[in-house]
Length: 326
Image (cartoon, rainbow, N blue to C red; front, side, top):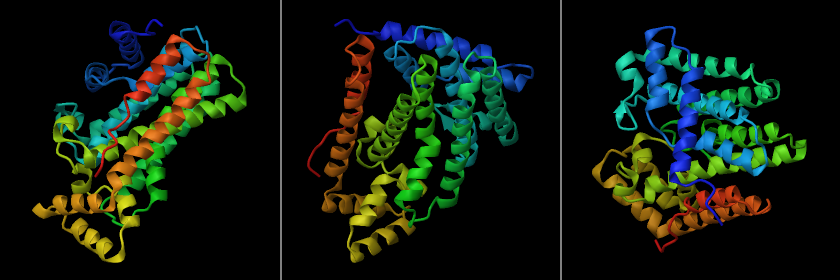
């Protein structure tokens, strides 16, 4: 079967998304002109608007409104990155100086707010804008909750799975859910299918985050593009650490907590890595990721055979991580 979108075709779609982003963002002030450049020219895979586009095609939608909806999703994502970099004190983004490094914290926060306002202002002009409004305002609410929870629980060793899942829902999964649910709204599906589409997007967004958390502990530096255990050393309690803490016996759990308190020490990473190996967690976490990917694939396979269905399946397959012995 012919590929739905080859590399050239995907690049053309991304170019259309970037043009629409530029058109939506106003540039009344110089700082907003810089924000426009930041959003449009800073790169990124545009995975959120592409997800929206793929599902619109999967559902048989043939209009052009997908471009606006996908761009609004990307604007929300860009605004969250501006805010995150200030909160996290990050100096770089995709190999370039973070926006707040050149513009300052106050301007960066207000610019993020401006991007959100641009997206919502444009949304009200769309044919399905009223139906989509609740979808996107829910995303913005969840983003705020997720960021606040992460701030409150950063460096807290006792952070549990419930808090972790709420953070992932807010910061990652919710926007993916909006992209797939939004495709259903444009395609005019019934309420039950719209819910299933949203649930798929939420699960896919969660998968992206859980996989990133896994790679932070178990991927090679060359693959990550950064040092492994970065989340651990920053004080972020993520999925692998929660699972390790839950499975260790009291003595080893106490040792893990001690290593957490002294995570800057040279031996901390090596000893935590050894605890993961002794618990046999690397392989089991990889299998769980694989099982979730196959569950998402099964949902997509229920749709009629088509190029876009195969494209989504192919994309999901690239998320598999090696299942090897610890």
